[in-house]
Image: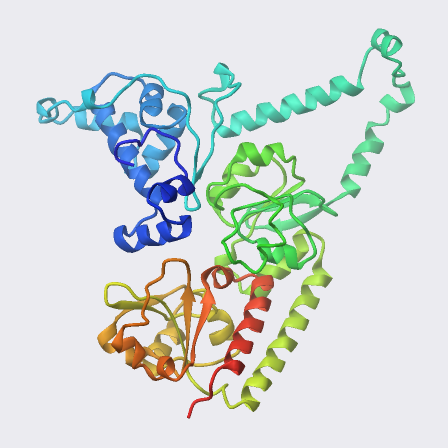
Length: 472
């Protein structure tokens, strides 16, 4: 990556180069370097762009091409996000410093020659650009302007295809619209209004389709699926997710925080559902876009709100009526089996002589099912933190004291390339491990906390507990 930072990269390509799988490589990056492959590549490109900015008179566009971005706009956006200020301000500030002129020039080390615009896709950072057929006049246009222009072209083309002149009508057999038809604008407007509803959101009142047919969803995939709506486009799906098979044929748009606006526009959605301010700002000009502030909502509040957005309020209520009944039935089964009152730990990792222990009901990995809905407890040293946690939280625990954090039952988040602890004497002497009450839960299955995933997680966790040996 240090040598070929200008090239087209993908997680699959990197993994193949080191004889690994994409998932394993991503995990190893995070473990060893505390970052993702995508962020590591960004850091390289930012450092190279800074050197060129300070030591050459190259334009932002030429610098962008030199470090692997398609144009100056994208470079400027990434530069400001990384360094906290624009490239121009960054350079102007340093130029005013007396010592700047004495800095050795490093710009010659980097090739400024123009290359083809690049395309970069990764699970942790999705950036996609296709240089084929690019219009020079749009090269430096901001996404909001570009999207507006594309929408205008669509409207104009639609008008051209239906509003032909008399002479054209006689030549292609299409009748000229009558005066009655052309004066029916008020009727059309009323028909459009009848097909939309106004809903209140954190971004104000928004008109959404009464019955959306072409929905794009980022991150909140399972909630929408559970309401009976099959999206036409979604953010990347974690391998092993409860709904992976249902969405296998649906177009993937990249990570939820950097989904491609161009790809979404091409899908012609009538409703977009997003989880963050950044995604809302990037996409709201394409179609009616609803921001769901999921981190500030309970699961039930979130699903109820999404149900209102898509016109499925009754289905949302039924989902939770059925879910709560299922939870109570599950608790009764565990109680009758003598399991409900025993402690459970959720762990992940195991390298470098330490293990991550979940200390929150919102961490995923089954924590919401176990600690919130089933109401089961962790060992006291962890339970104190679970009771006070206000968000996702975990703790790195040394193997020497891991026994204090280990419950009567242990769920370990599993993934390709995780640490092999079968020969670790400390791990094997933990009672839950020694006596067969260690269970694995797939990372992808436990990653999401939507109502669809929670239902599947509940089934899996309860079945695993019932099948495990009882505490002696």
